[in-house]
Length: 579
Image (cartoon, rainbow, N blue to C red; front, side, top):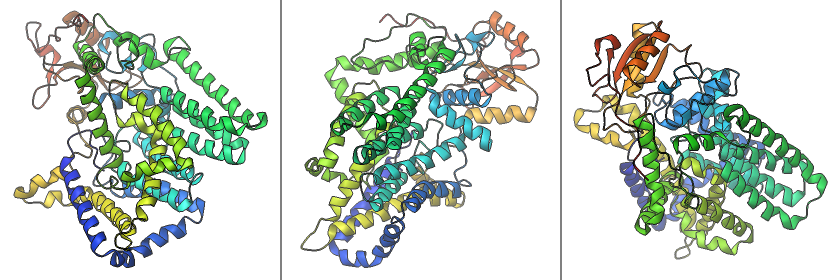
């Protein structure tokens, strides 16, 4: 609800804190009145959760229905960050029936952030999220529907996994709380960098582990293997951590060989498929795409306990700048103050995404969980993930998707303990939890109602839109240029010109899998001779130069800009400073 990668969400955070403060005050003063008012709603969900299939349906369907209902107000999101475009390139590749693409002609013009052009043209990311996006494009005509369906599967899987460890009514509550906090308006559902695939993987591993240890069922062990494959196809290092956790959790159970065979076979098949994919993309079965990109461009930088990757020179300043950006955060490992700042930034971002004001109060009961043997083992597993995130140069919500199931478990266990709180023999805790759910629903309604009434607000009240505007954006300057070219008709070749102060986080040069067959081709400037040769190669495309950093960005016909013009010259680059 409160995490917006496109802008600050602190005004909404302030409103939520105010709502939570009012809720706590009312719960202390009149808990019994609150219970009489809200308990019937709680009983409805408890009754529904008596049927596990209905609980799963509610967990998966509720966020999808709500997100679908508000599509007129919040339409399909536009890709806007580099990761989105990289994932969409992969989706375009899979939707075309290929594992990867041949190196495009004049490939130096098409190099971009988080993709590579040699030995093949593809994304640096693992194939799992791209497969979901491709499914959305094939089945429903747009990649975002793959994100949409994946998020429904995520919350349904979270509910199933929790149901293996706790009563179903609490499993349903945990999945709905997660959907409320980071589902409907969360970054995962409203971008093309979804956490659905690794989140599903982590939930399958967790639920499979609990079921296998309790009942020693072969199909449950197979679910562990499927979850690990999902993780390896999206977050490989976290797959290793979950694998270590699985061994520690199952070792005392002394499972029979027959129980482990189905899972073992699925693991072998999944590993073989990923090794084949690596071979097709990078030419080396043991070099996944992200390691290949790291070797070429130095991104992403490794963990703090690994040596830095040093790149001497770059063909394009934007690739150099994103490398230096990541290298800057990697270098903080040598500074105590830098490490503290990085840790504070990670904690603030993680709190905004996973917790927010509404779920903060229950988490005060975390220390009490250590006494519970059922939960203690998962607290130990969480430490592995904390070490992982604290020793990587940056943290984004996607990085923690594999352990989302553990967050849900801890949240529900804390929630159950908060409900037992009494003040002067009054059920203050029970009333507080019910009112917190009301606060969560209100915080969802604020962006919905705000977007609905925004066109009718007087100019003096427009500032209130800060409460919902940063949640996610649906249009970008790139979209505006695309609309302008669509209105002109025909085919177009765009040479993107950046000014020296350009931010590498706002990249324009991204194309689909079939560059030659695209109606609009985005290209970098290399030099005048190479640019002219590329324009001649794509002679059926009208060439333009885009001044990307003007306000607003605008197009200039290629032949109207002479070689003496600074607009036509690429940014000087290309050596990174000595490191």
